[in-house]
Each structure stands twice: as C-alpha cells, then as structure tokens.
View 1: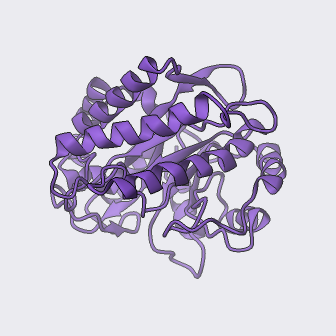
View 2 (view 1 turned 30 degrees about the vertical axis):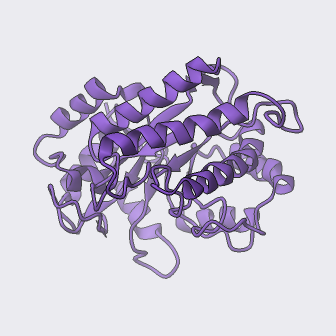
View 3 (view 1 turned 180 degrees about the vertical axis):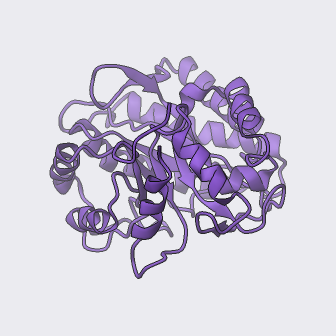
Length: 319
C-alpha cells in the first residue's frame, strides 16, 4: 500500500536568512511539509538570525500546520574524526550549542533531528575514524544528559536525536558502508550506557520513545557508495535492515546521482535526471517502509530560489 501525496513529508534545505519566520515562508513558497536548515553558518559561526527566543513560536506554527519532522543539517565544517584534537573539540562544543537551540523547538512539540556527516578519517583508517566519531558524538550526548547545564530553562534535557548520514565514500569519508554506520552507533551507545545515559529518548509528542542515534539515507550517496538501489531495491533495504535496523531509519535525502553506482563521487542530480531515474523515486515514495519518512531535496533549484517543481513531481508519483 502506498502513500498519498497529501501525507508525503517533503521539502528542501532552506536558507535561514531573515530568521525563523522566513524559513516557514520559504517552505510555503515551495509547497513543502518538512525542510532542513543549518542551525549556524555552514562554516561554523553562530547564527544571529536563529535564537531560542523565537524557537517555541516557530515550533507552534509548524505543529499547527501539521509539518513532518524537520531534518536539521549540522555544518559541514564539523569533523568528528579529525586527526587534530582541537578540530574535534570545536565540533563537539559547537554541536552542544546547536543541540540546545534545537531542543527548544523539540520541547515545544515539533519533531526534529540533527543530521550529521560522520566525518573523514584523513588517513588514519576507517576503524580509527569510526572510533573517534563515536567518542565525539557520545561526548555531546553525555554532556547534554548529565551534570550542570544539561537542562534547559523548561527543565527538559537538551538532547535532540542525532542522525548519521550515509556517505558516498569520497576521499576518506567514514560511513560509506552500512557496517561503518552500525559500528559508530554501537560505539556511541556503549559509551552512553557506560555513563548511565539512556540510548532512547521520549519522542516529541511524549507518547513514545525513539533511539538517540538514527540514520538518514541519502539516495545519491548510497548508490555512489556501491549499493544498487536501481536493480536491487529490496535487497539494499533488506541489507540496511539486517545491518542497522529499519527502526533507526528516520529520514531520507532525496537526490538523484550524476555519476552513479560505485562512483564514490557524491554529485547530486535533479530527480529523474541521473543514474537513479524516475522509476526509482516512484518506488521510493510508494514503499510503505519509506514513504512516511521526511524527505529532503538537496538538488539544484529548477525555478529561482525554490524546489516547488521537484516537490510537485515527487508528490505526483504517489499512488
């Protein structure tokens, strides 16, 4: 059984210029029901446009309009696997600040996640890289769950679930294989358990729970990494379930691929214009395992400043 276009949670990565209200206006312009944004500059500087004071009102508007979960994107500059400990320290401390900002939105009832590129091992090897990523991200979660400063002004713990993004394997990226993602998750959870920090968190509605660490599946990255989503869709999804678990899959980056299977290039094409093709996306938006997840477009705008046409295209593939 598929998904109706009215129920599809889809949007794009939006500019935060102008603050919280402008984000919602830009989403309305493209006809979105979810979106992504950077909580600070992609280069790591704190945003002047986004603050905790406006976060609750922002969340209230989104919940009133029945938006799906937001998939906020951590700045690219963060490298949790960096060889330089000062770079890892910067990423940890900045992400703690990001979490505190985003937790104000979550506490106001709007579901959201913080999506991260796991990191690049810069020649240390993927095993070392995955260990450093697990150490870094567990530090963030432990710091926000225990001790002084762990609680926000409303008394709630300032944690937002983290989503590890599947990567294409460009350069020394970690997270190219499902096994690497699983190893990072295992490392984070073991460290959290050792510190007495639960590995689940109440969901934004307060009616259930969800894992502290989940996954974003980037369709371009997964294909480029060597998983044949075109010819073995069920096999790839089944392998993800076996290695990581579909219960951890919380979001999709919906991107076609310029270079294709096993290229390790990470170059996005517009929907239907790349190696994945429209039949893949039609299958994706109608698959009961995937169609209820928030889907974020990271493609080139087909019309100035908006993904309206691509959002309409994906909605039109639903049946």
